[in-house]
Length: 121
Image (cartoon, rainbow, N blue to C red):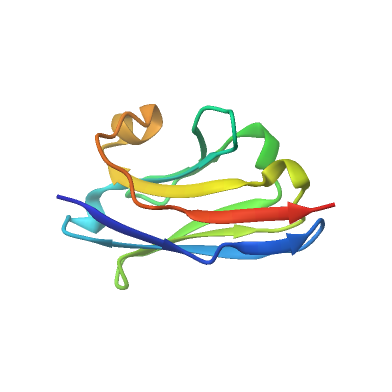
């Protein structure tokens, strides 16, 4: 069973940066795809960034050029560097790990507690 611990959220002004971290345990980290998701109040959770076991990445259109996902297999950690943050990026951010299809679909049975990101205008 995968265990996830997200950290790094906080309150930042528009235009600022944050770096989120997700420590993964209980799985074969190096062979899993990883995803960062976010859920804003009143909205569905959405996949923001994806990285597979080969290091290939993909992003939702609204964060392209601003967010970067990366992974450190030795530390069993995935990161989300968020630059030029906007108020619409405000949400609880979650990570998860699994097969490529599962991460793309986001249909996980369990989630971590997430980390709150709040961007003020």
